[in-house]
Length: 296
Image (cartoon, rainbow, N blue to C red):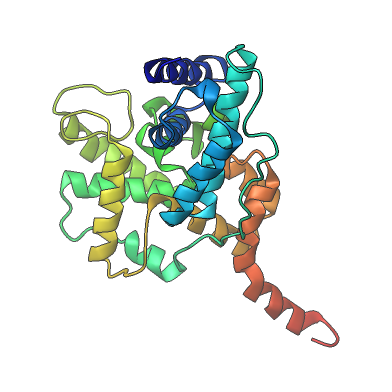
C-alpha cells in the first residue's frame, strides 16, 4: 500500500461521510483536516500503522500545545476512519483499541452582557446598504440563536415574517423552527423591501442575505464583519458568531426560559449540551435563594 493509496482511502471515507452518513460539509471538512494532519505526521501505509504510531502522533500534538479538546476531536476522526477501514476489509485490526480520549475540563461558554449586545445591535450611523444588511444579520443571529453557517445559507423561503418564525435545516439535516421577535421582524422587513433590492441590482438569489454581487456570503467573511462591528461598538472582548449564539441561550435562561425550549431553538440533540448555559444563571438563582429560603 502506497501513500497515494492512503489518500485514496481517505477520499473514499470522506465520500462515505457525505453520501452514506449525510454529514454536513463543515463536519466532513473537519474530518479531512484532522486526518490529513495525521497522515502528514505518519507518512507510512495505513496497514502498517501501529498503536505506537498513534501515541507518537498525539505526543507531537501535545508538544505543539494542541488543546485537549482538539486532540479529542482528532482522536474521534481517527477512530471513525480506522473503523471504516476495518469494515472495508482493508485492516484486520485497529491500532486505536484501548487508546483513551484525552480528559477535558468543561469549558464555560463566553458570552456578551446584555449591554454589549445592545451596543452591537445599535443601528449603524452610516446606513449604507451593506451596513444595514450586516445590522439585520446580527439582529437575526442574536434573535434566533443561529449557527453562522445557518445564517449565511438561509433561504428566502425559510423566513416567515407573518408568523415570526425561521425554518432551519441544521446539522445532520435536522429541521427545527425558531421564533424571532416583532422588532427583529421589522428590521428584516425593512431589509427585504429597502436594502436587498439595492444589493441584487436586478439579479435574483435564493438566499435571504447576499453580497452586492448577488452572491452568498462565506462564514469567514461574516466573522470579519462581526469583529469590525464590535470594534466600532467599543466591545473589547473576544467576539465571534458563536459567542452571539451563546449569548442568545444564556440570556434566554437568565430571563426564565426553560431548558427544553432553549434546546429545541438551538437544535441540540442532547439536552446535556444545552445545560452548560445554566452556569450563567447562577447569580439569579443565588438571589432567589437569599430571598425565599428561610436561612437564605
